[in-house]
Length: 428
Image 1 (cartoon, rainbow, N blue to C red):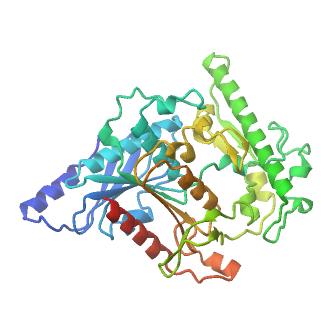
Image 2: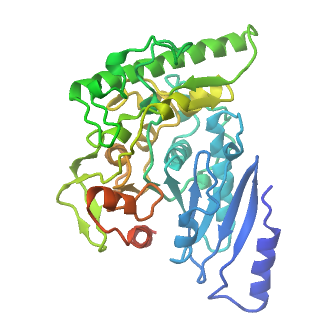
Image 3: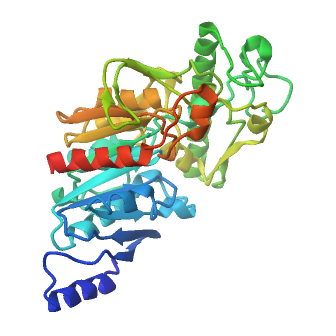
C-alpha cells in the first residue's frame, strides 16, 4: 500500500557509498492508500524525530512546517487525506489515513519519535487521532456522540500512537459560530421572516459596515444562544433524515445549510478578542512576555450582508454533517457539549497524555480557542504560547500592523518554527 520503493532504493544507494552520518536532503511522494497522499522530506543530518502535518480537508503536502522543520533538522511528512478530494466517508475514518502516515514514518530508518502537527482544522484531526490511539475504539463509540466510529479495534496497535503533538491556531467549533442566528425557518432562510433583533448586519444592533462593530453584551449573549438553537435544530433534522434513510423511507441526499457567514468574532474585536488569563506572548524580537492578557490584533473587514447571503455549507449527506461539523450546545461561545462529537479538540485533549504545545496567532479569531484547548489538556507536559503579529497562515500580519498602528511584525516564521524546534529537542 505504501509506495516506498524509490525511497528505499535511495537509502540503499547511500549505504552502498558509505554515507552514514549525513545524507542529502530528499523529497519523496508517498501513496498512503484510500486516496490519501503524502510528501516526505528528510533533513541533511539524520534525526530520530519526524513531524507529521495534516488537515481535515486541505492539502498539507507543502505546508510551511514541512520545509521549515526539515531545515531545522527534522524529518517531515505533509499529507492529504481522503477528505481533501471530497470523500463522502464518515469523518471518523480520517484516523486510518493518519495511522498509515504514522506507520510510514516509523518504518523509516532511525525515526523513533513521531510528532503530530495540527494547524487550523488539523488540530481537530490530531486530537481525535491521539485520543483514539490512547483510549481505544470505545472512546469514539460513546453513545453521547452524534456519530460513532466504524472501527473494530483491530485496525490500530500501541505503536500507532504519536509521541507528542503541536496545535497551531486550531479552531474548535466553526460552523455553529458562523450560523446567522436571525434565521427562523431553514426552509426559507432568505425570506422576510427573520428575527431582526438578532440580525448582526443591522446598525441598530451594533453593526458597523465600515469596520469594528460594537455589539452589546446582551446582544452577544442572545445571538450566541440563538446560534446554538439553530444548530441543535439542524442536528435534529439530520438525525430524523438519517433514520428515514436507514428505514428505506427516503434516498440519501446532500445536506445543505444556508447563510453561514455571520461570525461575531470577525465583526467585533471584543468577541473572543483576548485570552482570559495572562499568557505567554512570543514577541517579534524572540523574547517571551508572560505577564499580561494577550489581546488580538486581527483586522476587522469592511463588510456587509452579501457574504452571508451567498455562503452555504453543502455536505454529501447527513452523516457527513453529523460527523464533521455538528455539535450540541446552549451558547455557541461558552456553553458547548464538546463531547457530543468525535471531532472536537477540547473534548479529545482531555483524554491525551503525551506532551502538547499549543500555539495561537495574535492576528486571528482563534486566540481564546487555543487557550481553552490548553486549559482542557490532560497532559502533564503542556505549554501555550501566542505568536505576536502572526496571521492564520503563520506569516507576518502586515495588515494587522497597519490596522492597529502596531508592529511592524517581521519575524513570525523565524520565531514560530524556532520555538517548535526548541520545544521538540527539549523533550524528545
